[in-house]
Length: 410
Image (cartoon, rainbow, N blue to C red; front, side, top):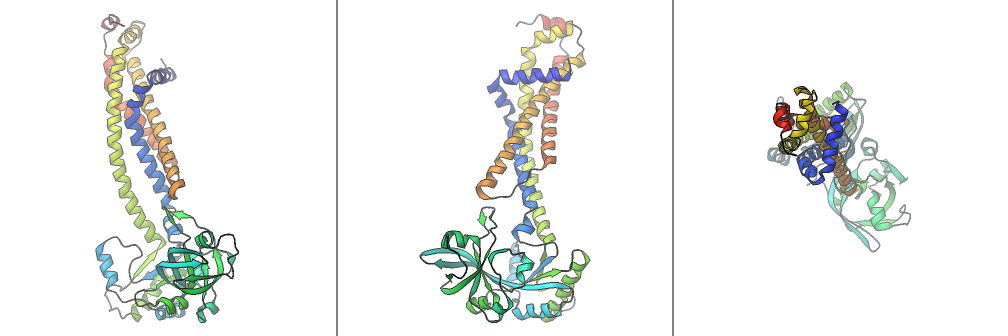
């Protein structure tokens, strides 16, 4: 019997006993689905973390008094006890950094209330930016204009708004030139940014952007430390040189003692990706461990079903041996059948995992991307599980005495 014939018999057996087949493959399907879904999410988010979530190009860096992403209480306390940056620090960096292509500064308030006519929006992020932040952050204004140096110098009451403000408050009206109220103050809309959509279920378009001088006049900076953004003339050495130069400028201004650690923190695209990679790796390992249990359970169930199949087909095995089939022929047949069963479970699990991942993406916007290596690995592992747990039943079938087998009752 060749491989194709053995696979055909295995598929016929699965189809003839549908309920038994479903229960047999359930463990393999669950294990493979879990791994595929997680890998699909991790693969999608890996390309999203720095560039989409933080809008950091590979040549961009951020200096702040604390980390942008705090993962433990020590980092939180260290940042809390540090002196705030000031806009004078930003001005010093902008004037003195010769290896920086451009320098910007930002402030933000997470809980602004925006009103237009009878409509209002709460929990809107209010941003204060220098005009140079737009190219650093890669802000795309699709209607109207961005902030200018004149807006900043005069602390103008003008704003660029995110798409949520247009859709939820202004509607079909042309927003340019309209007045909105942000935390009680009136501002004129001068631009609308390109819609960015959702990330992990959170909208990235619910914000208003004003000149940083206007933000400072309205909200102050006593409890809000500016972040200093910079862009190097390239990645690699140019970026490192720019970061080192800014570090020297800030250490001097903040009177950090020689040999003492920095009283601030710097983040880059690479630091965000490294942080996410560390988190996703641990998450992936936990998922693999849980999925392995499902695969082992599925393998044990396949072994039990194959033992039942050997018992049911004892007379068939006897006839095959009487017609000249060798032990290796019988062994190979049952190994191929158990492997085919597990492969079918792997295919179903792969499709199920991809379906779950893409459904979640549609519902909450969590990024996902299918990894072909994960699909191939899932099918290989599931097939291997079937073959491994099929060895004992297959060997038992191969060792049957043909005379005893022929005497078996149908």
